[in-house]
Each structure stands twice: as structure tokens, then as C-alpha cells.
Image (cartoon, rainbow, N blue to C red; front, top):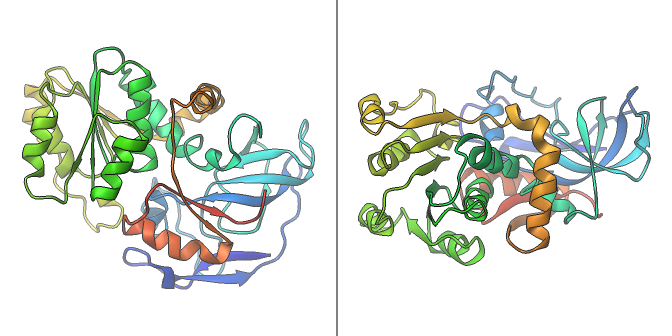
Length: 334
């Protein structure tokens, strides 16, 4: 069995050369669990932080030993779990960058392969989609009349945030993204009302013009600096959901915090989002979102490659913000 490991301890943002494809022992089916082949592997920004041991207290993988962490859609080869048989499809968070996975009891969820394209369970129906759904429906509780602002709007979380906001009745959805290709994805595929390219001069004025009424909800994926710019524009009693803060994933020191006085002046409700809290709601989310995919109201785009050997290069693109759509590796054929 092949798997991807670190070559050495990381001290900076990871690149493709930091990884090696190695042979490893084939895992065995655990008691109460399943042995599965990895089909669609999800690559996610938080993994860059986890590789340095800086994500939610989770340890960094041992160089040369541990598979790089990652969630995946898998097909069961052997089962010792009640109600699960060979051929069934499952999703699990702790699969790793490898060809086969031993998944213990309680670490995986059964999937309905007819509900949506299987690869969607690595993205829009996976952790990124659950994150967006939790932020919009469980925390911000977006409804009719809301005006929603989202940064990193071309990403799998941000793009889904805006679409769910619209589905739930928001009257205007505005995104922030970097570059014309990403902004086109946000407006043409995800259906936002506007997308502001922060790489263009005068973008802050353009953002102000795109928001003739102040946003009532802001979803933050990037940085406290960007959150501060949004906070200045937020409506009184607005809701702010703090999620990714990607700029902190590779920083040695946290950046300056938000202006507490401005939070008070805006009477803002600021909510931190940790998606782990909403794992018990995953099946309910998938049921709702699968229907949206089926009727065309929830769109998604993938940046997909084939083969485990292609994983490090795609991950480097993700770390550099160069991917367009959800980063997915099809490790094997469906």
C-alpha cells in the first residue's frame, strides 16, 4: 500500500517537496470497524497548520512514519461493523493520504451513493459544506432580508456560505476573492450578487459601492485584518462568524486582534465557529443539501487530480491559494 508522509519536520508553509510517496504495510480490518479503499481524498487548508502541530492541539504527523491527515470518501472492502457490508460507501475524517484505511468503530459515516456525486462528500457535502451550513443556519441564523458578506468567497466554504444564505432568504450576497477567475466563479457559478477582487486597486471603495446597505451578517475565512474592514461596514446589531483565519495557519505569532471598541459600537454579535461541534448534525445537513444539489440551487466546483502521487502538488497549490474550486484527489476509480 502507498501513502504520503512528511520528509522532515516543517517550520514553514508546506510545499510539494516536503512530502514523499512511500510503501507502507497494508492495514487490517479493526474489530467493530471496516477496512476500506480510499477513493476521493479531501485536501483542506487547516491541514497546513496541523502539519506543524498548530491546529486545535492535534499532534503533527511523524516524518517518514504517519500518513498526512485528511478526510476521504471510501468504499468498504471488509467489515466487522454491524450494519455495514463490503461495497458500502463511507466518509471518515481521519483517513489520511493513503490508498487503504482501517477505520475503527465510530470514526466513519455511511453514505448514500445515490444522494449526490460521491466526490461531493469530500467537499460541498463534507466538512467544508458542513462548516458553511453551521455558520449560516446554526450560528448566524440567516433569513429573509439579511445582507451577507463573505471573504474567500471562491473557496468551498465561502462559496457554499453565500449560496446557503441565498437559499435561506438573504436579499443580497457579496463576496471577496482574489483575481478575476475566482470572482467570476463566485458570481457566475455560485450566484452571488457581486464579488470584489481584493487584488485590484481601489477594492475597498468597490466593496463599499457593492454594499449600498450595510451587511447584517459577515462570514470570516481569512484574517483579523479583513474582519476589521468588514466590521467597519457591518450594520448595527450585525452578526459576525469567525471561521478559518487562514493567515494564522502559517504564522509564528497571532496577528493583532479585532477592535473591541468597534465591536461594542456596532453592538455586534461575534461567534467563533469550530465545525467539530456540528458533527452530530452531519447527516441532517447532507439530507438537506443533497436536495439543493439535486434541484440545482447549490452548485460546486472541484479542482481535482487523479492518483495519490499527484497529492503534494495539488496541496502546494492549495497552500498558495492557487486552486480554483475544492481540492480533491481521486486516489482510485469509483
